[in-house]
Length: 163
Image 1: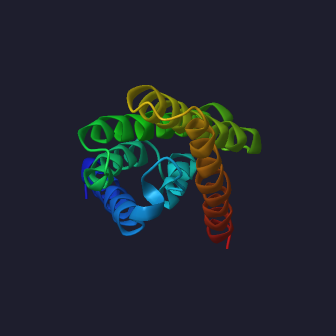
Image 2: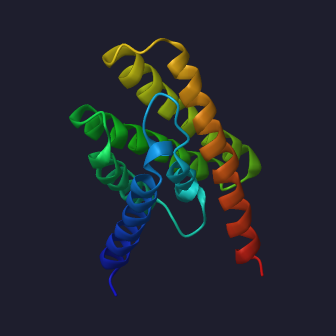
C-alpha cells in the first residue's frame, strides 16, 4: 500500500472513532458543562506511529461529531477548528521534544488550553453569550478528557509498544 493510502485510512479510522464516541456519548459531549470523552484522542498525534494523519482525522471527526450538536452550524465550525489547533499543538510538541515527558506535558496543556479558549471562551461565552464560568467548565472537562484520558491512552500505548 502507498503511504498516501495508509495516511488516508488512518485518518478515516480516527475520524470514525472520534465521531462515534462523540455522538454515542452525546449528553456528555455537548453543552456548557461537557466532558467530551472523545477528546482524549487528541493525544494521538503525540504517539509513535501517528502524526498529521491523526491531526486530519481528529479535525474531520470534530466536524462530523458536531453535526449532532444542539449548537448547530456554529459548532460545525468551532469544533473542527478547536480540534485542528489542539491536535496540531500536540503534534508539534512531539516534534520539538522527540516524545519526551516535557513534550507530553506541553502537548496535554496546549490541547486543553486550545479547546478551552476556542470552545469555552470563543464559542460558548462570546458567540452564545453564556456566563463566563462556562470557560471554567470547559477547562475542567478538557482537563478530565485530555489530561487524564489522554495520559491514560499514552501510558497504555507506550506500555503496549514496549512489550
